[in-house]
Amino acid sequence: LKFPVNGGFSADMITKLIFRQLFEPVSCTYTYLLGCPVSRKSIIIDPVLETVERDAKLIKELNLDPIYSANTHIHADHITGTGELKRIFPQMLSVLSKHADGRADVRVDDREILKFGNKNLEVRTTPGHTNEKNDMDNFEFTVRRIDWRAGCITYISRDHRMAFTGDALLIRGCGRTDFQEGNPETLYKSIHEKIFSLSDDFLLYPAHDYKGFLLTTVGEEKKYNPRLTKTLEDFVDIMKNLKLPYPKQIDKAVPANKKSSEDIDEDCNESFLHLFGKNIYFWRCVIMRFCIVK
Image 1 (cartoon, rainbow, N blue to C red):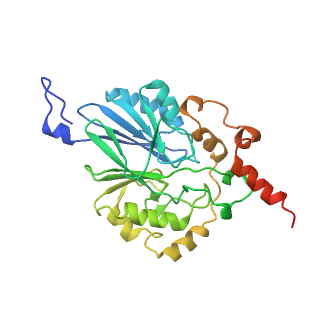
Image 2: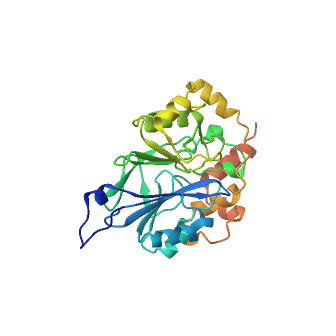
């Protein structure tokens, strides 16, 4: 990175991107920091509560002005660091899909653009790991499946040929589809239509990795991903038979991540009544399950 001399900016500085890939080891979550070298405006993607101090220190060391904290979806395996970062950087705005049930300062939808300085990220909705609508047919009487949408999205930098895929597409894998109203058919179509439609040389950065990999490419995943190289029918069969345990932090993370950033430090173990007292969908399902006379 070439810094300005006598108030001027080099051509290299205008075209380059400040970029850091950061890791949280407990949930194996990647956080991404992107900045414009001219304006110093920046965006952080998928911050984690436990590493907020580290991230804030780095932002200050790089002399960045963080204007957005963008989550790829409402996470179930960790609590977002967005709320704490907003306390440290009051100018920062939280970003979430408009299809998610959580609160955010900015709600984004497919093909919308987030600008930070002379850089930008394109939003693509990539549901399937988490759904964008309620499905009465798939309703199960369990707190973890009640009416809420996590709104999974992918952020794309066309100038730098990068995509941040959240939990939709992982390295040689993909996000699970057995909770948060996930749907394997939807996920398969999302990845093939919204991510695999990018050029083969696009770099892909997932929200998690559990085997020590940092990144992949569209071309690699189209050729080597053991799930997504299969037919739709085979993919659905694979996903429906994974038999994975629920994330350890799901009962704490989901309520916290649905709240506004100002409320995120409150007790996340909310009462049953607080969670569902005003949830019409929930009570309708209770009535259907227990009160219909056969």
